[in-house]
Length: 111
Image (tube, rainbow, N blue to C red; front, side, top):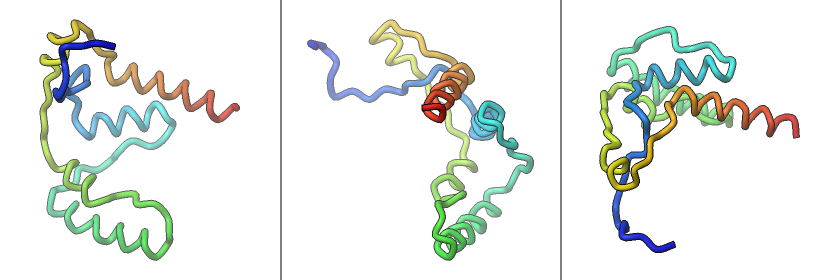
């Protein structure tokens, strides 16, 4: 495939979505309880080392990592204008993508 586009970085998203909204929507789609509390950044900075210690003791995967704690406390915005103008494509909304993934996981579980 030949293309004039190379060595470029693109944001492949349809919209800006907060971390809380993403977690809430994901929980709804996959049948889990959505987040109930809003934690302050200092609380998250205290929580991730405790979660890491619990992971080490239990041997299970982390529920909260340093990266997720810090990302949850940040407000970031991304635009997809560059990739849209380069390719002329639109992207599927996040909620629609989550429902697509739900169907994918349903198929994987039934196989």
